[in-house]
Length: 137
Image (cartoon, rainbow, N blue to C red; front, side, top):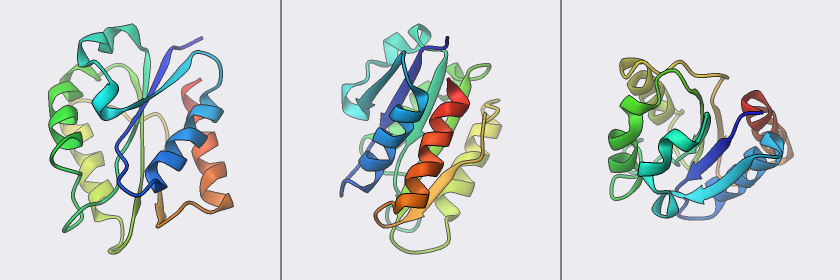
C-alpha cells in the first residue's frame, strides 16, 4: 500500500474540494495537507503525491506559496507516483499544460491524466478526482 500525500493550495475552496475528493479516492494511507502545512523535509516518507493548485493571474501557478514549494520539491519527485489537479476561472488550462511540462523537465512521470475544472467542481469533476486518487493507491 502506498503512502500518499495530497497537497494543495486553494484560494476559493474549489481546489480544496478537489483535494478532498482525491483523498477519498486514494483511501487508507493517504493524508491531506495544505501546502503551508506540509513539511518538505518529510517528502521521503511518502511514495505518492497528488498536487493541487488553481490557475492564477495569466494562467500560472499560485506564486507566493505553491510555486516556490513545487520548485523546491520537484527534483525529489522523480520515480514517485505523481498526479496533478486544479481549478481555473478563465482560459483553457494552459497553466496545467505548463505545469505538466515542468514535471517532465524535472524527470517526473505523471501516473494519470491531470484533472482540471472550471470554477467549483461539479459531480463529474469530483468523480474524476476520486479516480485520480485511486490511481495513486
